[in-house]
Image (cartoon, rainbow, N blue to C red; front, side, top):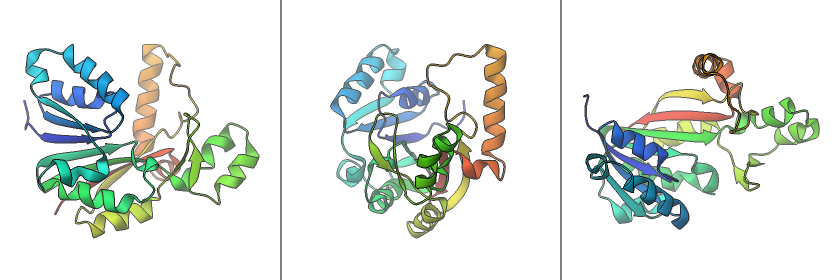
Amino acid sequence: MGQRLRVLDVGMGQGTQALRLARAGHSVTGLESNHAMLAAARASLETEPEGIRERVRLIEGDGRDTGVHFLPGSFDVVLCHGVLMYVEEPDPMLAGLARMLAPGGLLSLLVRNADALAMRPGLAGDFGAALTAFDTATYTNRLGLTVRADRLGALRATLAGIAAPLHAWYGVRVFTDNVGNDVELPAEELERVLTLEDRAGRTDPYRGVAALLHLCGVRG
């Protein structure tokens, strides 16, 4: 097994990502502010073998208050996936997350791409909404909530300013953003889709119009 990492999963939801990392041998702390989500994560954790359960710690708390719960430099990896769109002022939160990283630690962000908000409605044939999307950084998500998106250039500057400069970035859901979560594909076709998305997410200009951006900053 490779290096065992100390991972903080901010806004972990039902704990799917945290449990996968624990199964891979890492020590994972999950931080979640939604009580129902936290209860679901705890229920899932209870079904795991003892060796996995002992590698996971679940805490009810907000990603903006990491300094209340943890000491600076406590983690090798901090994950913040699908969270920033719900935070009106993300920069202070990101600075707090960066402080949680040990030297050389990785800050992993998954955000909605504000530079590609016209793609989803445009490809769905809602051309009026696509035109409107050019002039805004907010959108209505699949839960019906109006939330915000982020721009690569602004996040690049923020990461540089908090001593976790951008190391790499990828596009996520380039061709599949309008595919429903409940769509099932035959194994062979699913493999093609995953290969396609992986390649497009690493290749210009395709990654720039992805629905989501995955950014990796490394603490100096």
